Length: 165
Image 1 (cartoon, rainbow, N blue to C red):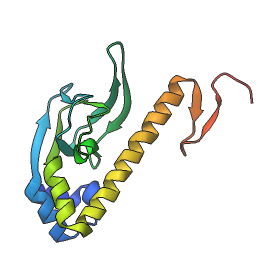
Image 2 (tube, helix red, strand yellow; image 1 turned 135 degrees about the vertical axis):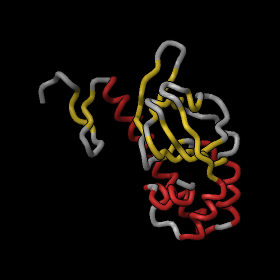
Image 3 (cartoon, rainbow, N blue to C red; image 1 turned 135 degrees about the horizontal axis):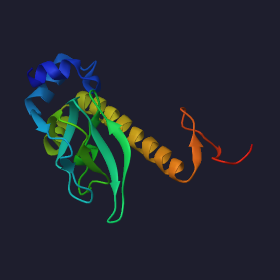
Image 4 (cartoon, helix red, strand yellow; image 1 turned 90 degrees about the horizontal axis):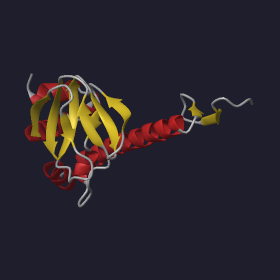
């Protein structure tokens, strides 16, 4: 499939007009990652925004002593939002969970598109904000879990695990 065809069915780009899809397709290149391949390193400048086509990656918090998986990202989802910000290093590490195919878009080129086509840019940035919000929510849920706090499906916290309410 061509990038244009993939973008027509990808959940992240669903509902964008043909002109916007054509502009995005001109920036997109298909890439494949092997199982366990490190796609993004934390504390590094992120250059690319990715739309997962097949397979999945894990978003990880990484320290010298421990790596914690925060969220799995699969087909129809996106990662690499920090590539749209100037002077922002990645906050998370991203690793392929299995053989994964994605569309890779230069963050600089995507920022330029957002600036030169405000209607498309606004829609893309709103969608990227949903990606960021999803990451924050997943991080909060994982942290709460590690602290023994139950998190409901709606995201609200309940009593600590093991306590009587």
